[in-house]
Image: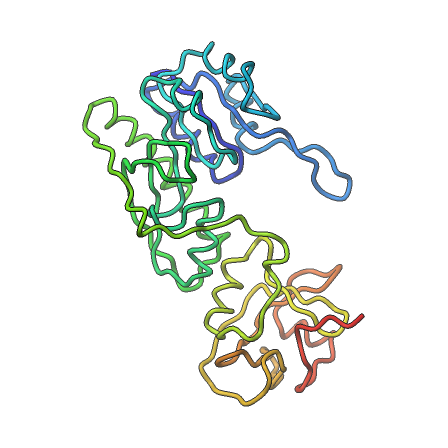
Length: 313
């Protein structure tokens, strides 16, 4: 089959690589435009574009996709199917109706749970013990299309969004190729999602990383994991911002106000939460690297009774 692949970030790379190894032909790749990054704001190509360039496949990076010009460009490639993985934009009806076999999406959750832009992060934040990959026939909704195939994947207790995403991405590539093979064989019956069971996974913002110490310690520990590597969980000690990269919860009760440092040990800082305490294990401050609390304490004076979470001006 002639396939157009649409995808942008690292999560989509295993999917396009799996298609390139398959018996079908990837005739073109569509990705988001290059974006400025870093202090120098140098333009950086998305990972999927780099794969396409290496494979010598035509690339499109439109600023807008709801244009006659873009639709015509897609049509000129005469795709039998469009495969999508983390492209970053919702496709409208003219594109969805273009390929005879439809548009197949690779989504990082077990739909209808965690529809939206950040399914991997929210599954970890919410303390799930399993997630998975769903392939679906796309419609104009936000991950509301009919399900084709699903496969589960365990979330380990020490998983972060950053460690879970690559495993899901590899599974996504394999399931995409399997989905297309079964579609060609006429062996798949799309299954309508139960909208009543749907949950959302909205795009995360930088401010979502600010720790709310009134939450339960177990929830805070999951947020630290789910917000790693981006946007990262953080709090303030006076005017200093602490990025918290690793923490574990303890059920030990305390009468201290949430956000209060209860005790300081050689390798941990115990902070009162809304219920239980959060044991900080890895911290980073401005212009420094991530470090275990034992190293952090060698260069920072931290005392019990300090209130975290309120930025001094």
